[in-house]
Amino acid sequence: MSSSTSSLSSLSSSSSGYLKPKIALIGSGGLLGDATLTAFLSSEFSDHFEKPIRVLTRNIAQPLPANATFLRVDWDDDDVEDHIIRCLRGVSVVVNLLGYNPDAWDTITRAVCRVKPQLYIPPEFSFDHTLWDPRRIPMASVVDDKRRQTEMARAAGVRTVQIFCGIIMENIISGPHTGVEFLPSRRRIMALTSDSGGEHPVSFTSSWDVGKAIAAVSTMPVAVTRGDLDQVHISGDTSSWSKLAKLMGAQHHPMSSSSFESQVLNHTSPIESFIRIAAAEGQLHFPSPQSSRSRRGIPTNQNYLVDTYTLGAQPWVKLAQVVRHFDKHGI
Image 1 (cartoon, rainbow, N blue to C red):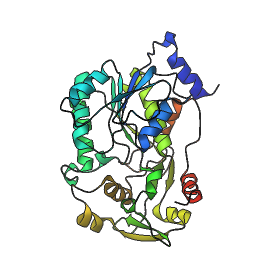
Image 2: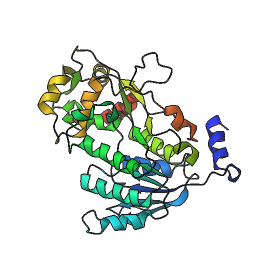
Image 3: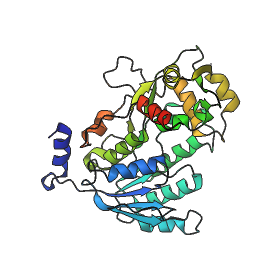
Image 4: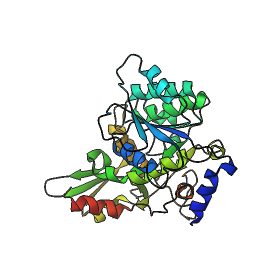
């Protein structure tokens, strides 16, 4: 038995006083929703929460996996907040995986503040915006909306843990906002650099490893999640835009982040625009605790913390694997 297996098994024993949490996932149709539900129902985690897991979703017509209950939510209903509260009654951990929907996010967080679970994981899963001067974040932007969810929950006394993962690997080919453009004959990466023209390392994490991290944090003992833990930084792999360009066989076109920010960033900008600026400033590198490249103010990753509460000991997905997968399928 591995040390992580032994650790988690001892935490799950009745003699340790560890109580299996009741989990609710809100939003299951997206990339992270699917990966997170899969992680919870995997052999690594399925014995460490009280079943069935509750999944609040607009679409209940999807196949129902074992040990899960789908609860339909219509975000346009007038009484949706009260409905959410009824769905969350008795739940100890709430994970918000709903895609960008500010009104629905506010509804969810208000419901969480009223239910007061032991743990709330808000819809973060990108760059650590707490490193930015708040005055730099446009009001009513996607980042401002993310920040507001955490502030609301913590102000109500709800234990809230933010999970930051850098860039989700599968999203690097989702469109030009991430800096990767696919043209009829070639690929190119419109990468942002620092004002000095230098490149910083960037952390990339697969959606499946983010799902694993969410499941690990959700099933940690209350003694852990009620301690000083309020943020978790994870990194599946580290690269740079120029290295990524070589890996993808793409043309590399650097541009200044300051000019990009002044010309593009506003309250309507997608999260990918903020991510590109954070990467250019070195705020998307979550180095290992042993790394000599760690810089003051840049968090180190906590993959070891996730691995401690994971039974499978599966290696983290590497960027080259994802690129090869998309190349194989002609994307």
